[in-house]
Length: 98
Image 1: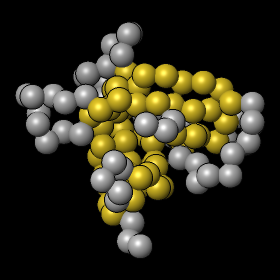
Image 2: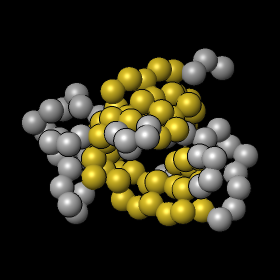
Image 3: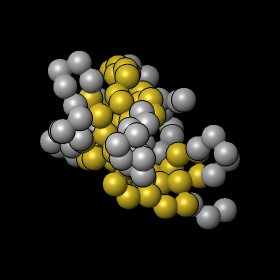
Image 4: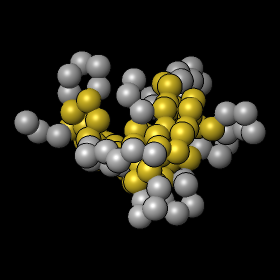
């Protein structure tokens, strides 16, 4: 999985997420934050945006493994997150037509 790139006026950083299946909520699309880094280089991709409170991520364009391009909004899951693990769930999504 490629890391997401977030950009602000002063910093760019990446975040990597891993899908986490929850059998108690099988329709919930849940991701665990696995890695973050501040980037020193600039990128020309469509950057995702992170809300000021870090609770909402908007991803304008992501390529999923079956070749479909999608946009999605991910929200912080306070009930599933701990000091060791941070979780976001997909709250809205749509297919980007070709």
